[in-house]
Image 1 (tube, one colour):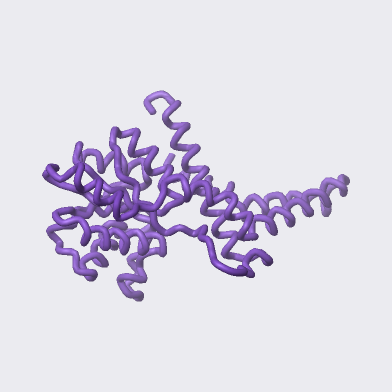
Image 2: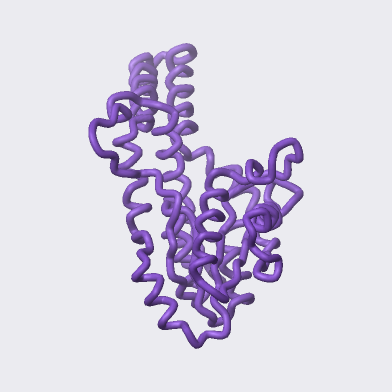
Length: 265
């Protein structure tokens, strides 16, 4: 089921959807008698690809996900620390966002952009939370080395003592991470660090395990820029990547909610 999910979901991503519509249209144009259908599908596929590539359209999809949980202010963090000052342990949980064990590149470059931002923000937070420990989460998906181990090496480079690092190396997706981290932290207070767009799904799955983390969203892609922004005028790969990230999260959230309705979910 896991492999099927990983292979089937990309077929519903923007580029795949547009190509599917375009190919179907070309089939009608070249091999069918319904030329009108073919022209309509080719036009639709082209229009959708252009729309998905525009940053304002991408923001419509991605913005609501990223804005669901606000960025943590110093006041919010201090309140969290006061409320949990008597707790024996405080955890900072960093969810893996991809990486590679390729020895040809530097350790920091081995992390995906998402993982790199999550880890850097978590290390900064760790230094503001005396006595806290970092849980780095991520198992083997398509790389022989668990994501948590790739992140741990970078964390040590950044000065985090090995004694303050706890690795969760068995998970393959966010649902696994929530289940496994529950067994590690129990009822201890925790701060959950992940990408802003991923946070709604992560919080939903962690809540399903009875956990109530303080969401610490990072890596926002939809940002306000002062003055004129020429990106709004032209389609581009950046806009398409944002739309794809949004589709990935909406599909993941839908799958997570569906699982709760299935027997044994």
